[in-house]
Length: 459
Ligand code: 5AD
Ligand code: SF4
Image 1 (cartoon, rainbow, N blue to C red):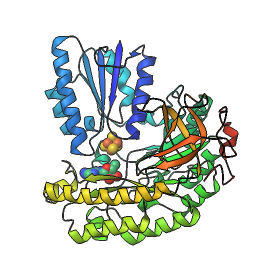
Image 2 (spheres, rainbow, N blue to C red; image 1 turned 180 degrees about the horizontal axis):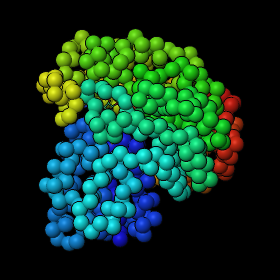
Image 3 (cartoon, rainbow, N blue to C red; image 1 turned 30 degrees about the vertical axis):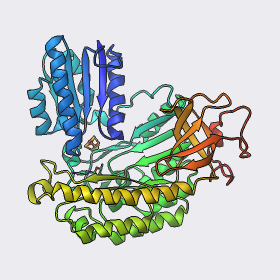
C-alpha cells in the first residue's frame, strides 16, 4: 500500500501525523509524497476555526473526484473527525476511514477492514504508546498530555480531544531517550495546557511531577533545547518560571495565550483569569527570565467586544511587549457555548480590528527583533531556505533566522550566528565561531555545549 498524509492544524496534529505514519510503516505501507502516487490518502484535520474546516471540505471534494477515476481509500482523522460536522462531511464525500484524536491506534484495524471503518473512542492505550523517533531530524515534538479540562466558550477542543489525560513521566522520559539517541537536539513538550500537567480532572495524580518539576527532569536528560507549548494562564505558577531559570536547556521562550486584554471579555470567554492576573504572571516570568521572549494568541471580535475592550487588548500588547503573536478573528464554531449563546459581530468590524492589531504586532516584532542585531544567537538550522544559497532555522527564542550557506555549512545543525539585520518577521545573520568571528570552517557544536553561558555566545 502507498499512503500519503496531509496535515492541518497545530503541533499536536503534526505529532499525531508522525505517530500514525509510523504505524502505517509498521503495517507495511510505503509513505509517498503526493496524492497521485497514493492508494490511501489520510487527512489529519483541524476544527478550531472555520478556515481549516473549509480547507478540509475542499480537499475531500478533490479526493472524491480522484476516487471516481481510480481505486483510492480516503481517510480523515483528527479534531474534525470527532465532530458531527466532520462526520456529515465524511458521509457526503465518501470517506472510508474516520479516526478521532483518541482512536489513532485503530489505524491497523481500519486498514484490515475492507469497508468503512469509523473509530471515535478515546482509548487509554494511546497515552502509553511511544512512537519511534523521527529520523534525521534535529527537532522533535513530545506529547506530554492530551485533551483539555477547560471550557473556554469559543473553543471546540474539549469536545474534539476530550478531557485532559497526562502521560506518565516514565513514558515521556523513555520517548525522550529514543529521540536523543536519534540525534534530536530540540524537543517541544506538547499539550493543550502544559501547566496543568499531572493534574487531570482537577486532581493531582500520584507519582506525577508538577510541570515545573517535569521541566527540571527533562532538563537532566542532556537534550540541548527544551521548549513547550501551550500554556493556559489559569494554571501558570511562578515555579514554572523558576524551573525555566534554573534549567539551562529550557529556552527563554514562553507562549502564553492571553486571547483578550479586557477582563470583561475574558469573563465572557470563561478564561478564568483577569487582565491583572495575566499581567502578574508576565511580571513573574520577566523577574525570573529578564531576557525572555514572549508570544501569545489573541482573538479579535469576540461577541460583544466593544471598542473599549479592543483598546484594552492593544494596551495590554504594549504593556507586555510581545515578540510575536498569533492573531485570529473570532470564528463561531458549532457546538461551542459562544456559538449557541452570543451573536457574532459584523465581519468588517472584526477584520478592521485585526488589521489594527497586526499593525501593533509588527511595531513590536520590529522593535524586539532589532534588539538581536549585533548579538550572537544559537540557531538550529533545519536546511535550505526558500531563497537559494540560504539556510533557515530558528533561535532559542523561536525567531525565524536565515543565514547564507557558507564555509561548508550546507545542511542541518546548531550554530552560533551573528545577527546582522532584522525585519519584523526574520533575523538575518552569518555563522561565526565561539569568538564571534566568521569561521573558515564550521564545526558543529557538541551537545555538551548546550548550556552556552558566555554572553557572547548566548545573547
Ligand atoms: N475563533 C478564533 N480563534 C480561536 N481559537 C480557538 N478557538 C477559536 C475560535 N472559535 C484560537 C485561540 C487559541 C488558538 C489555538 O486558536 O487563540 O489559542
Ligand atoms: Fe490542534 Fe485545536 Fe486544531 Fe485540534 S482543533 S488540530 S487541537 S488547533
